[in-house]
Image 1 (cartoon, rainbow, N blue to C red):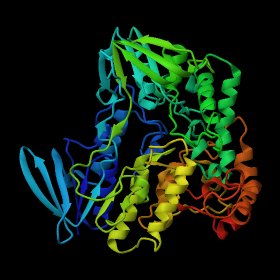
Image 2 (tube, rainbow, N blue to C red):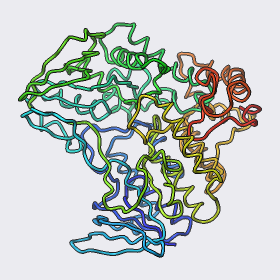
Image 3 (cartoon, helix red, strand yellow):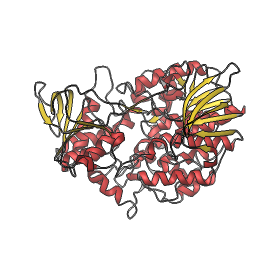
Image 4 (cartoon, rainbow, N blue to C red):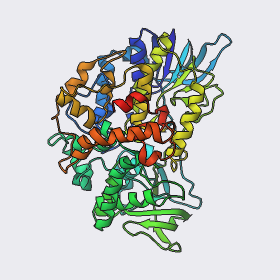
Length: 576
């Protein structure tokens, strides 16, 4: 069987590795001259938002100590991965696919440009591993006469030296760009239409100056408990109710807001609490409703570097003058009278407004909402011909690990060792409905998934679910519950098992390193021993066991609210 993979980014690399390892004739077509995909072009002071453990692949953990990798470090990691598994000999670089369609025999006919020539290829299966970010997207600015650039063009702050800068957006790149621009610009303003929910990389005072601590990681590596992922993707965090899961951050947000300080964490708390509680009637206030911006750099730039933050529904442009109206917040000021307006003069606008997809080259008839595909991967009607990777953006957690899990599953499907579930098309509809309800205020972000639930749902299909160690192996037992669910937890058994890898990684950390010194023994012990069984009993017997039934938010374990098809089974009631 011939498999052609489009794109040599993190998703394409792991797909190539898994298919070659399963014995398939697989190759990658990559339009650029190297691996990494969109990550090849980074900018100064770009760091990943998940740790090197959570971003890495399950059978190739980063050999360095626990950290948030810089862009350069992550590219080095991908190079090491490609070298270790001998992948580059199966990658054709500088080759841009111009068309792909199925012929009458059911094979893919692929046309590409390479060194000015047109080449033709035929394949049995096509894996599109380009993700969903293809063409820069720009916000409309009618009447504006200054310069405009997109964040995809941003490499450093030299372009904005001495200028008045307006950054549009509310994601991680907007935070990075505004903070970097503030170092050299005449002035910087940041505008977003919607309230933002932010989460710091470090869950302590380090996040008042996040970049400084990111740069110190080699001398002072973080402990596991300091990482954001330790509050979001551990076994313990998933076993508690959805309300308790969200409240762990909501309490911190409220605390920051009520402190009334002028530091970054106080601002982050204020903005995130306002966003999470001022929601439409009938919607449960929670930090789970949004795409969360996982950095505090934006808040630091406002608190210490003189960046002005405008959260306003509208902006009008006349020459270089920008007028913001229908404001909800300016810097630390909230609420603001609805009639209030603010103005700003901008020489240049930097658009941190994301990307659009472009599949003009792919001749298929499918719904382009990935939630209409099985596991955001396999579209109906093409289940034995076509799959997409990189369309799983974790509300927490990284795309590479989820692409790896999907690649492992696809390799088993194509080998005939697994089959799609009997009701897989009905499953798609149900999972789509649950995700849209759970992420109620993230409309348009259809790639958004819950990392722990998604990983477990695919692990069940593969047969590699993490297994609880014996309590007589107390150290491993504690780490199993309190450490983030790093990808190597899904390599302990089943197809492609490498259990020694998890042991190697966990042995680098102390038994209680994931437990905050501020006293979260309740979560680690009382939660597991008493509260989880109660939640599980409610989940199974008292709340309509399937898919966000009655009382799902406060009574159901978050893991079993139906996200990605996960619902409570009786064995989980007996062994939480």
